Length: 58
Image (cartoon, rainbow, N blue to C red; front, top):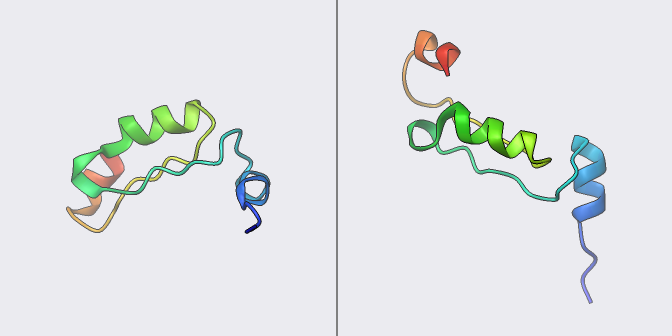
């Protein structure tokens, strides 16, 4: 049986839930990443599109 990475993943990132939001650039934004982080998961925001000012606003 494969070993689960949940505990190591949570400990490494200081999470309550072994879950990560995939960064989806313009599709999700900072609000969804923030909600995931508040729920104890790893919330990520994609930064490959747009300009620097837009990324700072989100």
